[in-house]
Image (cartoon, rainbow, N blue to C red):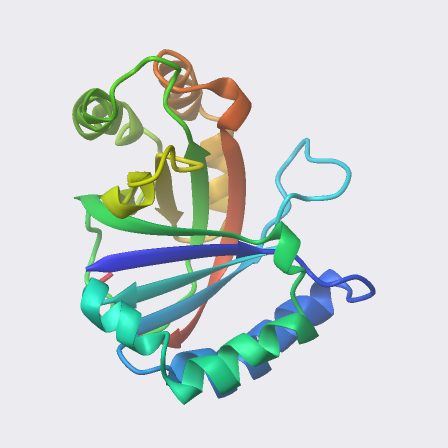
Length: 231
């Protein structure tokens, strides 16, 4: 299973509110969700975090689930993608501020079964391993020690680690190595978790094996377009 994350920002002249509205009501519904082989599609709209100021790095994130590389490649050659979703992107998104990552999801805390499209609040920590650390060591450290620290964050109902897929390292370094994803029932619970000693320990532990220059924090509220069923 490929879990694709696409972080995006509005095109010039488009407000964040209109950016969210267009992404959910037009782009995702009319175009992206119709691409063959996409099994699930969610749009996360930015949640401002305490202490943030200035222009945000991104204003939203798409989460897309695809079965495998073969069907992902096939989907990119369809009219639904080429003449639909891709052609529509310049109408609302600033492509030069878009970050896309294909990840292998490692589910640490699956959470309760989903029975509907109830929106959860989600925190993304985008990271790069410290210089000189082998990728295999970084992944092992994440799966074992760091996962144990993350599970102590209060209010956490789901937790996964999305490791950048190996093909992105074929011709050099990938821009990021992992996206840690913390899910909470609602925004107040997310905000309370950020103030907790448990989350402070997460940040402290990250500081021991990641490069602080490439640690980015982003929070969003889920808006399901297709799904959920197995997330």
